[in-house]
Image 1 (cartoon, helix red, strand yellow):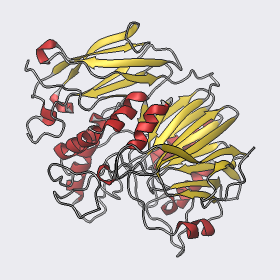
Image 2 (cartoon, helix red, strand yellow; image 1 turned 90 degrees about the horizontal axis):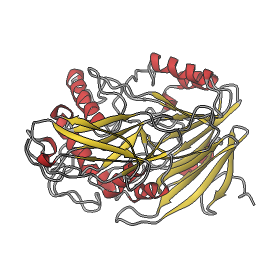
Image 3 (cartoon, rainbow, N blue to C red; image 1 turned 30 degrees about the vertical axis):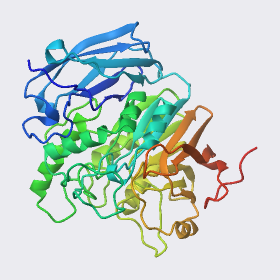
Image 4 (cartoon, rainbow, N blue to C red; image 1 turned 60 degrees about the vertical axis):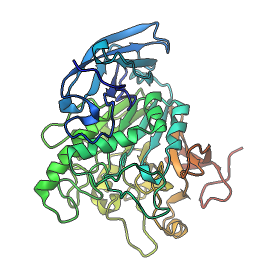
Length: 474
């Protein structure tokens, strides 16, 4: 067995929590973005045993589970361990190590947390993030998520950006320099290196190590504005499907997912129950998309069935794209959001009998919306989160608020959403940073909303924001 350099450069992560277990993850990569095509991550083409431990305490004096996983080259030496037999609603700590023959290194420790038991009414603390283009800024917002240590983190898409970058970009266009140019991702090696590039960021690693994640992708994990098996640029569909397959494999290799890719696909829509308080329904809005159909028939039937059967206080849709109607000042609607699929949106809303909350991203701004079915009956709310770093579009947001009375709030900072769902209420704070062009921005709350009668209730809001909040509560 060959000795390797320090292999845990990409950190550790956990995810997909249930009431009795989680998935813990790492990837061995002593040279994360190395140029040698025969050694992804700088690893030799051999399988390495990786020991893992789960403990009840940070010092690992109370070990509750341990074992050895095999990290092989076919999955870029990534490790996905399914840990079961844990207590519900409990914090745990985990770590990995490689044997002395490979260098004898030990990973940083991560903290994770199981979901509550099905009968529990305990609140759940969650964070939601999206759109973190590496070259557009520093990931300070993710460092603040790590500091909050939520019960679960949802990432709703554009975890990486697939586009290329020249060695000498135009002044002011990119914040973070690179030691060499990056090409547009098209191959498995390209996508692996792009994920590794992002995971070299200390704030991103900290956020993964601080709490379990349940992610869903949008488009930039493969290609901008792709839909199903169609690339969206007129290029060869068969070539694009090979590219998408490579992108999906790299996605799996860098997240603590419960399932592997099968053929050209990766099953990503799933249900994550949190006691009697919340059913989190994670939706894939890309893989099955067709004209007039965002989700695909099987996923829609699954979603409607889950909504109909749910007895949780809150039915939370975790998905990437703007869900509410959003008419632009010229009267147009987005062709890459739920506005392009009004019939399917109406069917989803008709399956809900109140208590709906939608968590979205994609548009690089904060928005908050009331939701109603086609008969005008209030059924819930949508919270749209801004980007971690990705630059916002040039949009007349004041005019959008004027044209859409159900959209109650807008803010243009970078940041994330932080919420608490309980049996008696749900509150969500828009947490923002003031700059991303350098590291270390502090974080603050620009607005906080609750939900009352399936409508938004403003709790606090900065005076200067364009918002339809009611006055702050005393």
